[in-house]
Image (cartoon, rainbow, N blue to C red):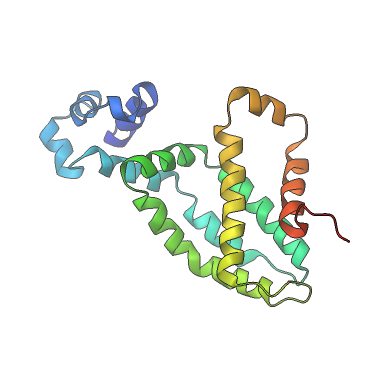
Length: 190
């Protein structure tokens, strides 16, 4: 069993905080010193697992592939693609949460920094389309990122009863509803 596979197995079984480098070395049938040659501490293994399951390339491709000039279509299409991509990387979400706890989100920060250029191009294009209110691109980008992250988090980490209740509507209805709120707000038009 590879070192990374051993770490992942133990993290899944016992939880990250309950596993030591010695436990991982034993599981991988290696000495502690040989493990520390490659990974001086558990955080380095976590970063490697994040990289293994990272949606980095799919996310960058999504931003590059979005085409069209209809702001509503663009937002709906991007949101659906981003949610689908995140759902295809469920292990990444688990490890990303650990990254926040133990690494002060260092991996997530570098991932967002790398994706920021592609996202900014999309947001700037969206901002310039007819029908879009004059908003700060930074504000629009952050609101959209919060929307995606919030959707994924509530879907992935909601209590079991809440996830059961969420099944009332199909996922597409949830996505359409959330995007509608983003596009049109919560106030009735006058």
